[in-house]
Length: 225
Image (cartoon, rainbow, N blue to C red; front, top):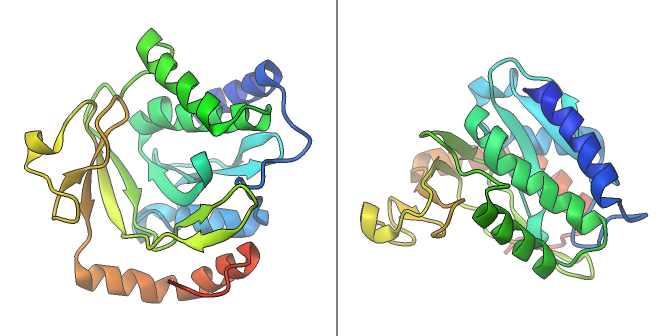
């Protein structure tokens, strides 16, 4: 599956074309730092065997093949930079959307253009919703908002686990934003969000302290909010 996606990435580059350099709200990171940040989204027992995609001037490329069916990536969609780690179902459906969205931005399209194309892609059947239950991990305490000038600010990430929930609403699951469970958005790519507990959140923050400092330094973030 990873090899098939590598071929698809190459096709998408030739289909859309790419800009000479990424937009300011899609910053490049040193390769090894990006790999470490991507893997920070996953629970420790999955990191060694997970595949990793990294962002380069021509888009996302496979940096490391995996063995356990999970693929980790640092998303940059809409100036929202964060790591996530997806199971096979997410890789075949929602990760493809994220990577093609990045390629469209690199070809010169605006964030609004990209969102319109994604919405139309789901309606037309070009993009598929997950066909079964599955999971994506966002256990990293690291998330940034990047503005059009490339300025990064902390987005106060809350480590959590996501379960695929196309078109599910908070009313369907008894969810409320900030509660023990809620839906991030209603749509074909909607997810049920389950934040980790306070003890696990504190442990994750301690374990990630060095990585947080290095990523902030790379992005030019001066203070944590």
